[in-house]
Length: 434
Ligand code: ATP
Ligand code: MG
Figure 1 (cartoon, rainbow, N blue to C red):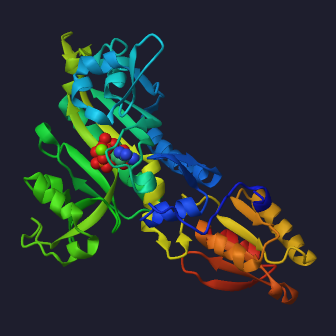
Figure 2: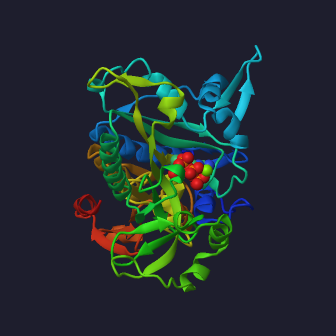
């Protein structure tokens, strides 16, 4: 991409309600813009990042044997009446009616629709297990949409639903998905923890959440410094008041709080703030029973499916990467999420030699399938560099005054170090580090 042709509307000012770095930098960097409360447009850079995250999620799920589908976003209310959730979902569920006054829902989640899809299509235990997923828009009329992409009203979620002939097999899939989620978040370059979560009536270890560790996280978790034990405080404190009181506390306040109890392994427990980016849940037959979705078991007896459900906040992940990776000047993208890996900065585009080298490196990197952007704008060097910092390209090749001595610089966004390299070596150096 040539920067002179790109639609990347960067700005100096952040919106007044943007209190978190991800919200400020994603808007200022021209990744997203707000359409309305909790509603965001993805501009070209935001769209690239979103697609990259979606691709990692898809690749790992496909490898684990899941099937991708896409359900209609608008679902008839009758579906929700049958499961009983039309009455219990409350105001988060946004309803609309059509010209015939028929009522519909903008899907906040899709258990009912997935069960309906499988019902009468999967009839035998021989067709099980089955794991269906989609990466699709969700709508939740959140009481407090805030923090940009972290808590939107419309957002992109990966939601998966698995169907099994037995509880044992459902738990096998649950464990497989835990391992798959770990691969996904590791590939995205995130520092995260898996924690026990509140599973309501189901109990046991039937619900786990994946939290990206970030001071700004809305959730409070307890983690062990010696083993991989972790729990959402919702799981360990009995009353909502206790949980809310801790969630209100800032990361600094919490880190001063000591926990007297030790982990069962003997390690020390401490409070951390987390952003929930994934949730896996053993459902049992709650939906299959109420919606009468059955299969014939080995003895030919009809039985309700054992189910589990698995969610990932795909658009929330875009912001989570930045909550964890930024400095005062802007975004620092990880390798798997960077909108462009290499930015070529022609300092003075009136300088023919600089422009020529920029064009040459641009086409050579493109030939090697490197995601590259060429900053060929007629702007001051300082301005262009500030822009590159704000956006957060992992590497910038600076072609400047030193070119007369046969040198260019490679700027590393994460370490902010500049290294001089000779023009002859720059291609091989860049190919080595990316
Ligand atoms: P939260 O406690 O943050 O409201 P939830 O328990 O309602 O999350 P789930 O129903 O488990 O979330 O949805 C699966 C995933 O979708 C969550 O783990 C989260 O990453 C993402 N998600 C949920 N609500 C939102 C939202 N309003 N904006 C963006 N992502 C969301
Ligand atoms: Mg919620």
